[in-house]
Image 1 (cartoon, helix red, strand yellow):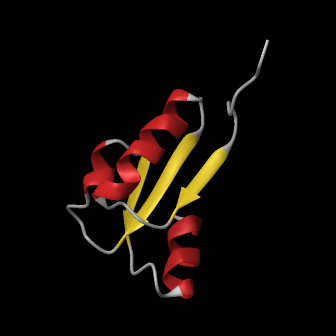
Image 2 (cartoon, rainbow, N blue to C red; image 1 turned 30 degrees about the horizontal axis):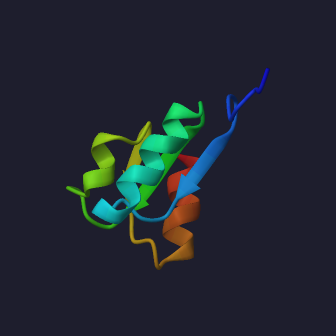
Image 3 (cartoon, rainbow, N blue to C red; image 1 turned 90 degrees about the vertical axis):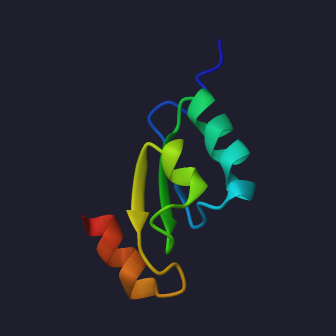
Length: 68
């Protein structure tokens, strides 16, 4: 019996429409998805377990978001 991705956290630096299928599939496999995107209305927000609106090109912003 495969364990899948239960207990794993996946950080995704893009919540655009092209990322939605991947986020959804990771959720199906049991992963907890954490999505960062600079757009507060990014499509991935609707399917992510956790969503943070941060500038994905600013490493300090991402680190601060992870600490949240």
